[in-house]
Image 1 (cartoon, one colour):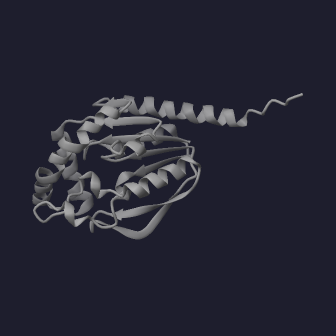
Image 2: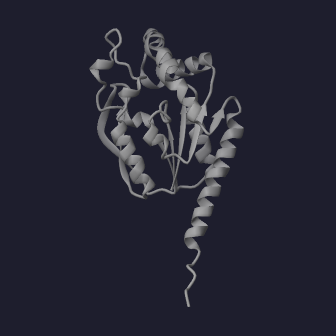
Length: 214
């Protein structure tokens, strides 16, 4: 089973890129995970900035659970992935069953942050997108999908998103096998082709009969 990690700043298009890859692979045995599902059940008070929670710090994620799930998925097991509600900034009581799979694509801002998790990936990708484009995408998304207002989005960007990106997130780019810029369509085709090749090679190996010993 193969794990592909896709990282990048908030608004860099990680989810869109990952979905492009899955659509091109067109194989139901390939699943998509979002690191956002692994936010802590409730945001930690110690990460507050000016009274508001900092969701862009690495410590806002449940690394223990994420590592456990990825290890189990890589062994061919099934896991119950948390469902996170962005409007209330909490996990819900619901879960989503994932696995067993031939391949998992996981996307998130800190996908390449943790060394132990990073070492589980067979392919590591970082989306390198200009800050102004990322901000505009984030603004549109948060207003349209998460019920946020303009002032709160701008304040959060300057107080946590931008400084956390520079201090913690951008340095993880060095661990990527592939850095994707504006040519995301081409990159998604290349990555999809590689995933399909890995799956086909594994399936062929598993189907080959063992040689009998006389």
